[in-house]
Amino acid sequence: MEYLLWVLLALLAYSFVAPLTSIVMQDVPPAPGLFLATVVFLAIASVVMVATGTADPSYAVSLEAGYVYVAGAFLAVGILAYTAALEIGPVSIVVPIFGMFIVGSSVLGILVLDESLTATRVAGIACAVLAIVLTAGGD
Image (cartoon, rainbow, N blue to C red; front, side, top):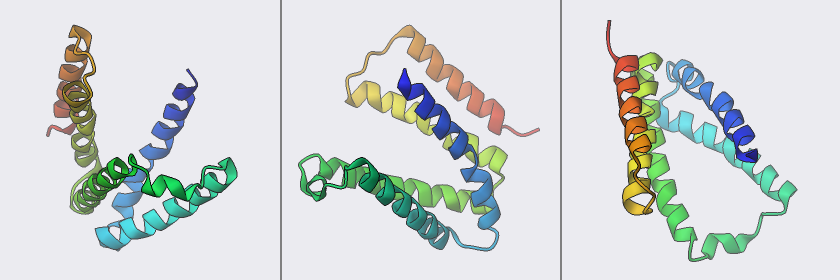
């Protein structure tokens, strides 16, 4: 259950990303903003890799690295589009719609990774979609 502490920390930290990005996007276009945020991310990730002894260059050329590079490309497209949306749209609508990636990832996990589809998961996915529609909906 150690993962719960990590996911709660991620939730807390990531909750600040959209509002801060929205503020920044008033003066900085999405691509430079994302570039600068990525520089900070890379600096912190580098320190973590050195501190934990995981800065092994062989990871970059392993067979599994191909999946990482493809995931990185999807991440770049997704985050660039997300920051562009935050530049022109309200956080209270953009973030819930972006949050639909949870549903997309769940469905892909079931279809591609052969994870089980249970009635509880179907209900959870339906509730997530309903929550996003209600949260992002107008007055």
